[in-house]
Amino acid sequence: MSRPDPQAKHPDDARTDPIRASFEEAAQTLRAFLDQAQGLAGVNAFADAAAATLSRGGLLMSCGNGGSMCDAMHFAEEWTGRFRGNRKALPAVAFGDPSQLTCIANDFGFDEVFARQVEALGKPGDLLVAISTSGNSPNILRACEAAKARGVRTVGLLGKGGGQLLDKVDIAIVVPLATTSDRIQEVHIKVLHIVIEAVERRMFPANYAAAR
Image 1: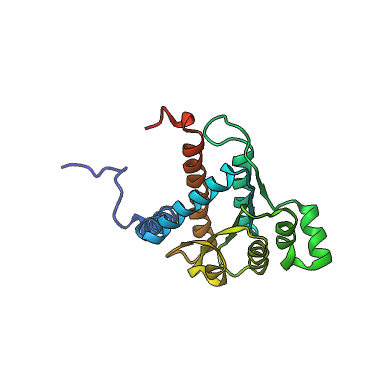
Image 2: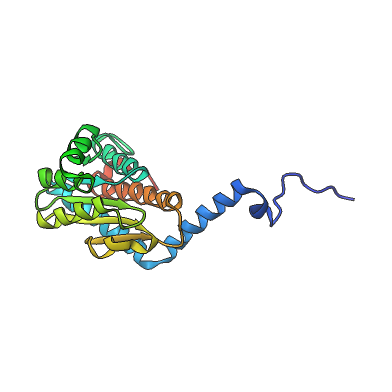
């Protein structure tokens, strides 16, 4: 009589093990994103816009609140530092300086904390990456309005159907299925990393010559 394999996974493990269930839910969210044509089309358009901006010497700007601010800052540092291999530093900035945020919020209100920085730095040909899991963050909406007024293109990394930002950005990338910010942000950071890789492959192909 054979003994059961203690390492074998039971089909109901995802229901009884909350950790495994969370991984399964994250995988389902990513699969739902991959299965929608507009998601991949949006990522390709984002990569095209970022490459065009950098190729002509423009600035990549990014902003978000809470965890989305962390993603915005992560996005910026990959350009000024490095991603896969050494190459020249590229111009990118995230609106995360606490002195600027608190100064603007104190003088103009929190809704203006990103818009004022777009007004200060943005110029035609630049690109703003606006991150909001709800698509309804007032300060992100204002940033996109300021960008439009200055001829700055916008990419929205969104969730929950896209919210008000869906029609306010030039390129909308919406995470489907997920209803919580954590699952939405998990796809957002994948999009940001994959766009950086796609742009690097175009601008610095030697860094990927050995890659399959």
